[in-house]
Image 1 (spheres, helix red, strand yellow):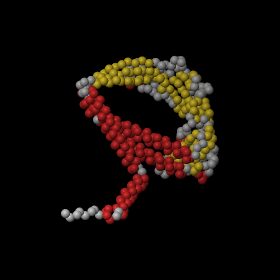
Image 2 (cartoon, one colour):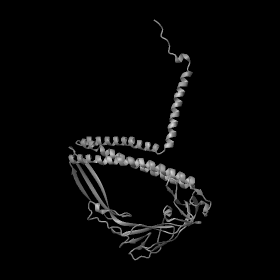
Image 3 (cartoon, one colour):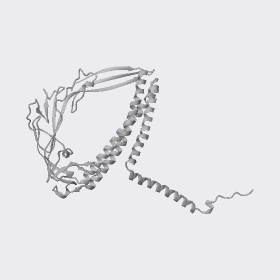
Image 4 (cartoon, one colour):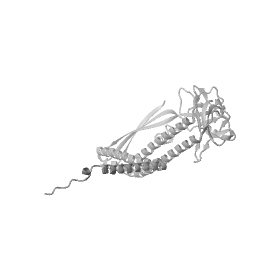
Length: 390
């Protein structure tokens, strides 16, 4: 693995730092707006997906065997059994396989830039930043744009001559044939080792992949490694719409959303939908965390000028910077958490109404109980003692 590095030192005046922090306010406001939209949208998306899965499970008919019955046309059905594919072929490299889906993954040996920096604030607000740029070579399945490197002329990555691709076969289970778009939902990918290739390119079989380059033991920038994964024939559980021609595709629910699952192994419909709901919950929390992080960053940018103003004295600047970060975190919890809570209730009106009725009922019960207890007290406890005449 090739590697080199160099160091660069830059200095910013107090005035330029203050100007940049003022410009950051606009970006911070944009982040706050974006975070608010994301948090609100995510709650609606989560509820909609939950309702779709609930309605889908209620409408799904589980069949004991994957046997066609015209009475089920247009209905979502759940079946389990052996899913069979066919001959798979990648015409670019002449790779043959047998199964349901074959995927080609292309990786290139490329330069990668890593930047580390150390910033020191000086009395008077001046700031000195030392950046260390490190360049090393690595295998990457995505193109690394070297045009943005600090030393792009010395570290250039060529473009990808080939791209990832996927090849499918006609897949059948019992009496049914899966639509190609539904087949894309299938899981159960495994590594596939080509036994032979038929290609006009300079690719050769090397270990568990195809290799294009002079020497696999000493790769150079631009060398390619092509690997394959496959979904083989095997047991699968499927939830899909039964078509009149014995085809299986996505089922559209009354709310306009589609459902369709192709899961390796034998699973009940309840287990399939439960896993989908679990994934929906994980996505919801992931987007909430992203929204809160964006909101925190927005508040931090908006209060950035305060820390910059105080940085005339480095110690004071660090202290104020810590304080603004703490305030940003508190504001994020208040406003971000409030948006999530309000949206959560707004997208669940029935549940919100029930909770409000329960709260109102508890308040009414508590007040009634207090009046009852007061009435039940003895007369001498309820009547204040009379003052004695002098």
